[in-house]
Length: 151
Image (tube, rainbow, N blue to C red; front, side):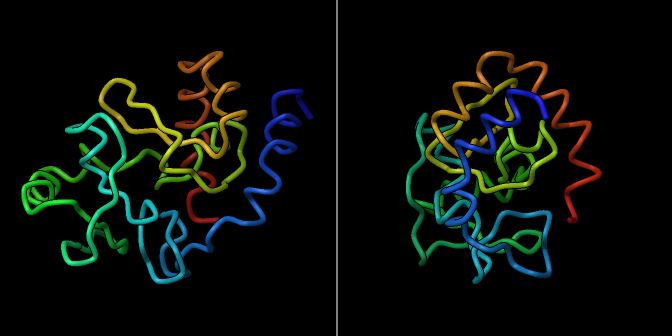
């Protein structure tokens, strides 16, 4: 086991145990038991406000098995016009975890936009490791995701 993988597994053990269970019908999405994506954070807010903002339960939209919440009707309209632009990579699972073939929760408050794509990580310590070589971890995660996304 590589040092990075050991660091990841050790740093994220508590978060893995506490992570919300994904909806059984959509293992490729990091969802709560009720099907809520991004823990209710508006996916558009990362791009328009530069930070994650809680969405409203009154302004929600189901997309490919996940329920997304939005802070405004304008935000919802932007999402509907181009959902792929706003969806997090790897179904909202941890980008670093995906890079090391571990499918674990992504925290919507630990995020980056790289080349127009939203990435989440599980903890700040894992995020520090990920930031050491973002291009490599994105390449590795993209390579691993097709094999682990439905596990």
